[in-house]
Each structure stands twice: as C-alpha cells, then as structure tokens.
Image 1 (cartoon, helix red, strand yellow):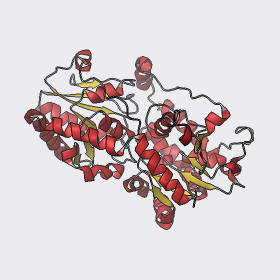
Image 2: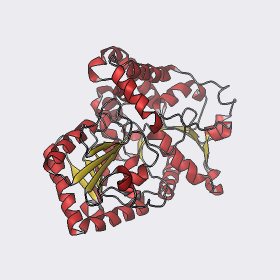
Image 3: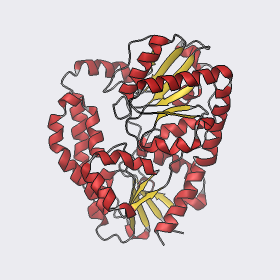
Image 4: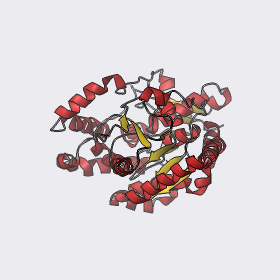
Length: 406
C-alpha cells in the first residue's frame, strides 16, 4: 500500500472552510479506521503538534466592529497582508520536522502554495511524487489583497509580482496540481502568468471532488425564535467571508431589491463583518462569527452562494448535508453542480445579474408555497449521501493516488 504524507505543518485543522476544514474532515474520518491510517499520514501527528483554534470568536465581534470603524487607514488590513506576505519567504528546516526521513513516503501532498514554497529545500533529494492542492478561490497572491480596501492597495501591488513568482515556483515543484473539479481552475485564468502556466502544463492537472463528514442533520426548530424571525417568513442564509470575491457585495444588492419589494423575506448572515459591512435593515441579520452554522443552514429555506469567483466551496457541501436547497452563481467550481439540476435542489443565476437572482429567489419562494421545495430539499440531501461523504472521497483519492504512483 502506498504511503502518503499530508503536509499540514502550518495548518490548524479545524471544522471550517479552506484547507483547514478540508483536512480536518479527512483527519477525523481516518481516526478510527486503522487500515486506512496505515496509508495516509499527517505531518503534525507524527511530530506530535497540536491544532490550536486561534479564530476571532463571536464574543469579540463588538471589539472587531469598533476597531474596524477606527481603522480609517486600513492598518489592520495592511498588517494582515504583510503577515501573509512573509509566508512566501519562510524556509522550513530539518529541525522543524525532527529530521524526518521523507523518503519513506511515496507521495507528499501540500495544501497551500506557501507551504510548498517553504519546503522546497527539504524536498531537494526527495524522489517521490509531490502534489499540491491550492484551495484558493483565486491566485493566493490576489486573495491576500482582499483584506485591504481597493483604494488603498497600491503599496501592496508593488509586492504582487514577487508573490506570483513564488506561487509559480511552488506550482513548478509539484509533480501534480490536484483540483476538486474542472471549474475550480477557472479563477486562476484572471492572472496571465498563471493562465499561461496552466495551459502549458495541463498534463499535471488532476481532479478529485471534495467531501465532508456525514453528520446528523440539525433540528429545524428553535433558531428562528432565538433570532426573533417569524416562523411563517421565507429565510435566506449566507455564511462566509464578507469580500467581493465571495460575492458579498452582490448579495447585498440582491437583498436590497428583495427587501424593498417583499415583507415576507429575511436574510440571516454569518461571518465577521470585515472588510465589508452588512445592510442596515431589520430583516437583514448579521450574526458575526458563529459556531452553530449548521443550525442556521438547517433552519433556512434556501442558502445563497453568490461567488464572483470560486474554487469548490465546502459550505456548499455543508448545506447539502443539512438538506437545504442552494441558490448559487454559475461560476468556477459551482458549475460542477449544474448536472444535478433544480430537481435536486440546485438553483443557478449569472453573477452580477441582480434581476435574475431576484426572480430565481421568488421562484424558490413559490416552490415552498406549493410544497415542492420540500421534495427538492430531500433530494439534495440524497445527492450528498451518494457523492460527497468522506467515505466517497477517500475511495476517489486512493484510486487517483494508485494511478499517479504506478
């Protein structure tokens, strides 16, 4: 059996989005599966390094809002940018990995471009295969700029080219670039250097659709009362970063149009209000950072994924797991779900077309009134069970690795 090392040295495995949540789900699944545990190894487990939850919690959201109002020069955004920028130029050493013999592994799988960049010197004599999964909804260099308002980014653009070269250096060291689905590559085409690289190294690209743990569905009662949302209204939810690439600005435009026309619709939003703020409307409820996202999803009539660009959003799988229909843009990795259609609870609109999004939302409201939405909610849960549990993923992953390591 091939031995695969997951390089999670600088990633805290947490039940969240991005590489942290992706690896957390795999790690938790493998814990009690001894046979599988002999094939996939996590670097931090070997080094006995614990995962630490350092996320900004909801109890600090008031402080966060005050700091945001005072931060007129975007000092916090610049600090986040330069902290991230430094990651491109950190070098991992033998001492950090306790002089671990990497040659015992047939493949090493990295889950951030910065991590592979930092480990390149350690891989100098490594003969196995190196894989990279980027997890970013755009070039990571671009994503780092999202913390800073557009008008104040000029200083950071001076560093962009250097970051892109480092990112491409990592991509070039990888033997294979593993994406979840074909559409996940799309956001990288906005950067000419990356587009040219991908088009000239197409043989390096492999696909393995993501998955998450199959947990019990949350109860569909209690939350509305807690949030003071009437039981008879239509509830729309969104959980995620408040950034343009995630489509948060477009979601506000959609909600503004809907809320002005209908009194029977509420929007419940989770995620820190940074760098963008929410609408000032009593039927637009911002929860900040929360640890009960599944409960919000389960008590919603529909979840909106308004992405401008997207990789393969794990939150889409979390929504499917709760049996809640999804309204999403036809962008990037979202397009993978087109094949399942409305009959299975997937509804689509074109990014930027506010009127189309609004009309599609009204169509979903009508489906709830007729009772048809309940059938579609059941179908989206069945689609998850059949295709997107970790058990499904591990089977796909092993098949891929066996092919690549022949």
